[in-house]
Image (cartoon, rainbow over all chains, first blue to last red; front, top):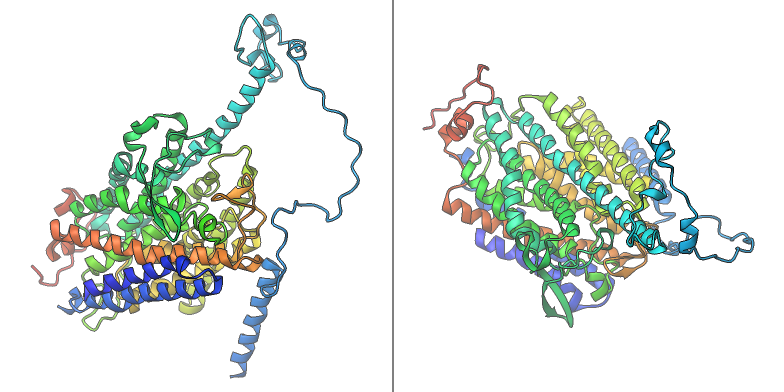
Length: 60
Length: 565
């Protein structure tokens, strides 16, 4: 799951970066960048961190 | 219910009033002309200007220097020290010429900028002392030596990495910096061709400070200033990982961060990389703008801290078996608040020094940058103190200190582009944000951060980057352009929404790219040497097992045991 989380987080960055080449409209770029940011945050908070919490030291 | 409605109305009224003060109005605002000069709208008729009379060599020769016998009497008033007699003459036979004076004026401008940048760099270096005592004070006495040593040696290991590799990657393609008289040797940038544009990825010149002509006085100033910034980013991570980080893992991680992680993002933002050129290449405002490093320094440090904090895991005793967080108080709050003051002092080097000069090219804005810095720090400490007072009924000292730092972190990116009212708003939001973020990281993510570095530097670093895209008022002018785009940096509230998009791309890069890179490096170090000390060592305290000596050998320390071997 950690690997999946890294991929999702990185894909969010790529979407934000490529937004400048996908469209020239400021509004559309804004939406794509916010979407990319949300995907990256979901990768960190929703996938990577929970994967580590499953084996957290306080659960042992 | 009615009280809630009243509170909502009151909040709405404050928000509208705040936006009106800062931006005139948020919606439908006609932006002020970017290059409009300050002063009355209608120019008064000016009297006829006298015709310019060129100064000749003969005019200069008519100016007499103080007589030697007068100077021999001493100069208690200072009236005869520093006169025409002190101007170096290029050709002794010809005597003083206009060219000598003009050359001296040019050198004085660069000298002022050198001295300014070096002295502010020295102030930033002293921030390491502030970080050291803030972090040590917020940790337990049994780990004082270990925490102090990490803060001490991060300076050395970071500098070594940056000198060997990091500086060249970050600044190797920055080109000529006019304020420093050139830095001409730094012209090698590796680029890729994408979307019809050249996008810079990393620098290729300046290794060891001798490669490709980089043994240059201007390059040396730039190196010193950038080096102390890089070290600030590195020392943020030691706070989050304190009290359980293996010292060998800390050394390797810090080297990797100083050599690769920090310089890469630094190049993209400050070294002529693809983020800086979003304006010129894709019409997004002035490209990614980060005046002094809310993103480059603080968010990079805070996000790397988050990545390593997740990998290392919480300290023993931080969470109950049900996952409820326990407070683990630091051992010396006096150190913490003193450290915050030292950091606030150093920030006067961090932000105003980022002009890289005090003379010409709009650099008199240093006064505005300094005032914005102090105002935001003040607002941040108020914001967090009031939040804690209202929510927990006590004005918590450590969080108030963190609020001061949060305000300073947040104003770091916009300090050169915003007005004082915006600075207070940015700082106030930062002060509240740091408290909310600490609660989120602690209770929801369950990432143990003994000093709150993820929230202070990560969350507020990102907020600082975004705030440029909102509050930049289009009145700053550093030599007529920024990131190669003419005019002044202007945010959403002053009419340029595209600047906010550029800032958000920077935020997405920090969250999506810097996190992944730091995380992967963290996993490699974990696989190679192990990131975390054993439970036995952690309970005993890291001072003896890791460092060989106690921080406070004459103290009687309380030893915790849970039966873990």
